[in-house]
Structures are given as C-alpha cells and as structure tokens.
Image 1 (tube, one colour):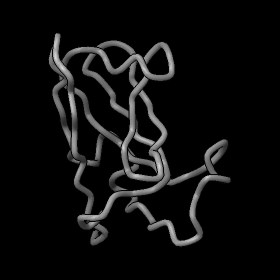
Image 2 (image 1 turned 180 degrees about the vertical axis):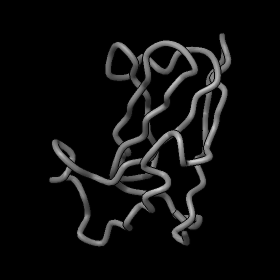
Image 3 (image 1 turned 90 degrees about the horizontal axis):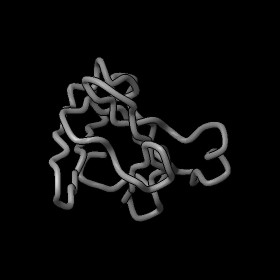
Image 4 (image 1 turned 30 degrees about the vertical axis):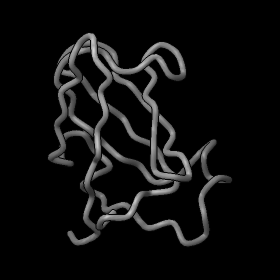
Length: 101
C-alpha cells in the first residue's frame, strides 16, 4: 500500500475460466496462492485480482496498525488489477495498491 508491503489480509486471483486461487498475506507482504491445495499456485491464464483486509480466520493475525484497504481493491471487478500466470515458470507478482480513492 503506497509502496509499503501489507502485513495481513488476503489476495484472490479470479481467472477468466476455471477455479480461482487465494492466499493469506504474510507479515513480510508476500503470498503464495493455492487453487486446489494451500500453495499449489494459480491456473495458467489471465486473472483479475482482489485484495481483502484481514477478516474471519485471519483477524487474529492483523496488526493493530494494519492499513485499511480501499473498497475498490476488494472486488476483482473493480480493482483494475489484471495479471497473467504463465506456464512452466515461476510467476512473481508485485501488486501495487494506493490508499487514495
């Protein structure tokens, strides 16, 4: 968020077809997606991305000063973030968010 890594929350990749992938954001801002298992990655192809604040099972991990994630990022339809997962390679994505609406 604004150049600093989020330390909690979750990320969801929503493909054009098929099952989406989700991940918990780690304290250092990294995440590893899972589609069918916890860390088996996302399916190949284009994905719309959503980023969610900590909630549900993740709430206990949220630091007290966790930044609020603007509402637009909490939907893959409104976030404006699209990535492409490519076959047979390591896919690393830096997802840039800004606090301003």
